[in-house]
Length: 156
Image 1 (tube, rainbow, N blue to C red):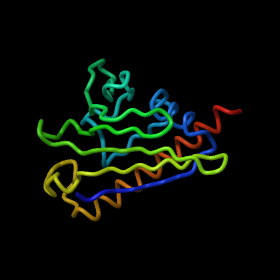
Image 2: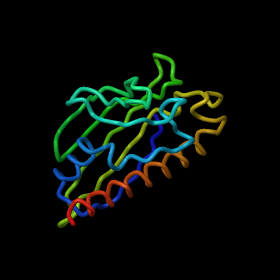
Image 3: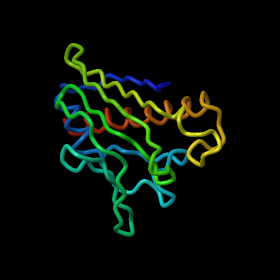
Image 4: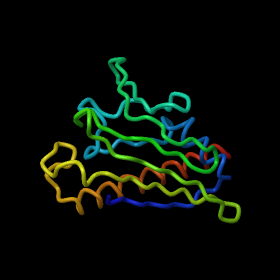
């Protein structure tokens, strides 16, 4: 299974980074037109406890993006990921690791499973796998940058 792997150091402890990632995802999440969660946009994301990731759309409807498969505060988070256009058996997998590096934390996102989504699928926009993964890596890089900026803003 192929994977997109993106890392960024943030000025926070592993626990602070984990908490921002999970408890404040709506504060740093930035939509991307290529990877919209639903045709109506991304909505407002939130982790529902340690069980699932959902988004609430402007019309009030909730969509379950995925189920949490690992919840280790300050260490590791893993969950399934699906867009509204995925069939019930289609899903990808996201793993996020939080590793201390001096007084910072390396946040690493590994997003696997896009090779199981056919090239002709709406979520792939007809892109070959390498192009899909390159665009997805750009998206995760931007998201981690927004996470880092939100952590800095919180400390001010």
